[in-house]
Image 1 (cartoon, rainbow, N blue to C red):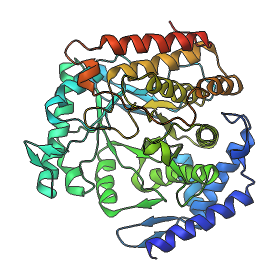
Image 2 (image 1 turned 45 degrees about the horizontal axis):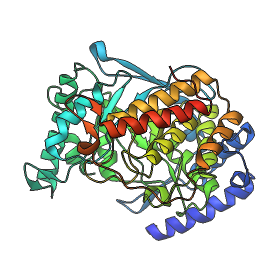
Image 3 (image 1 turned 180 degrees about the vertical axis):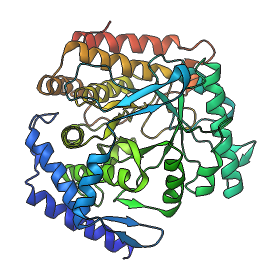
Image 4 (image 1 turned 180 degrees about the horizontal axis):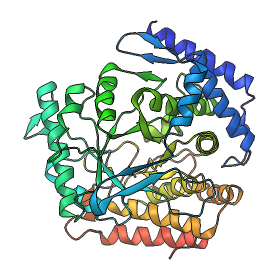
Length: 440
């Protein structure tokens, strides 16, 4: 089948499933879904999609079919927790609970662009965050002063990334911390080049095997996934649906996200997922967007929690940039909603990051503090939704705000924010406490 025909067929099928399962939650006024039957219906629609339509391989132009028994058996077989890292740095990463009481698992950072000169130092700073369970890699446009073009340099740059990660966690005093390879290229040669127990990835580490939008897969990922899975690595899958794409509105994007999560486990053996629903305005850092996206994300998380073992995370990606109040307010929204919906927190980053301007350790620590304060306040879905309305009321529809680079607002030697950023952080935290969050 031609790719265009797949995309048009996907749109038609998603529309059919939305009507068949009576999914109309974008009209709901609440910020977080409180109707379990809606989450269950969205999950059933995703399973029907996989059984009726399947997945699409862009490398061959062929459809991959799954029987209903295959899909249901795979859902049951997925792990609810995984062990990562080694020695004193071993961590257990598990599925959270809706309206739970236990602190969530954390990936504090990376999945962002940094220049090579900052590599090891940036990794060290994020690894110093006490609650960090694993760190993902980062990308860079040049290696040793040369533009990264073609398989040989891609493989070489991939090995350099793994070496920066390994050295950074060692300097932070956490040599056994799990790291995750962030693809410099999607070629199998790049993925396989980092298999190295000494300087690269160990079997207690992970790899980013993201399913492509519109439920698409590719051969090089399949090739690499087979080898990594046999060696015991864990895969990470970016499976969020995009509102405004071929899946349509929030309901369609939610069904796509759930389906991509299940298919990611079936084809790549991904054990961690960052699903949900995003808007193109957020991904392009054009405007700050919230309702009904927040509601749709909560449907995805609740659907996976109630009907599967999927270990899911909320990707905290504000559209406004570093060293701004808006950035931290957006971060708070994501951290509160993720916590209430049982989503572990993943790789805090500006949604469309500029070089060396995607993240600092301060936002990761802030994300953790807000999550813990949400738990301490005992917020449920209804109360949490009302709090989110108050926060987003000051941001909804506003253009994203440009900020600063990491060098301008964070001291990577002393591991602390600039005085200006520290003041902004203190102000936003105080305002959140006034709204009802309970910080330590």
